[in-house]
Image (tube, rainbow, N blue to C red; front, side):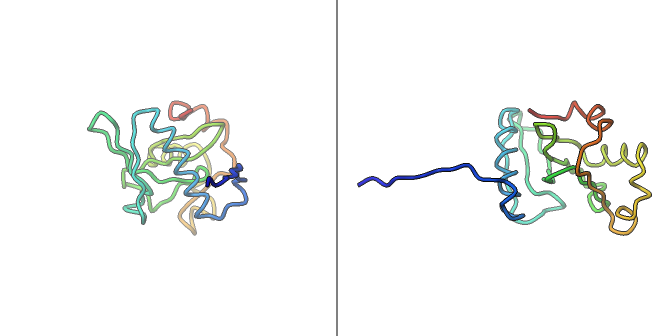
Length: 140
């Protein structure tokens, strides 16, 4: 006797926060595999990292904070973290401190209430200046 399985695509927006994080991890893991990385999901944030990406070269290991959009945080500074977030039909994998320095120097996020009072700032849409400056970090 064989069972019939009906598989349908899901709507990302209908997933809860944890399900979205799982979905995003699976998506970016597949893309990183194309670049020679194997990923290991951490059950709890470790030093700010959601997962570890190990390259096939045997030397490169990245601690990655997975986000649903560009989101910089004071608590991630100095931890050698990479931010990974979707935008413009691909995934960005960018050093947190590098993009944070750029944002503090070239935008007004440092003056925002969110940055001052909550220690973070997120972008619902990626501004064109960031797209151009960090296009080398876009994985497709």
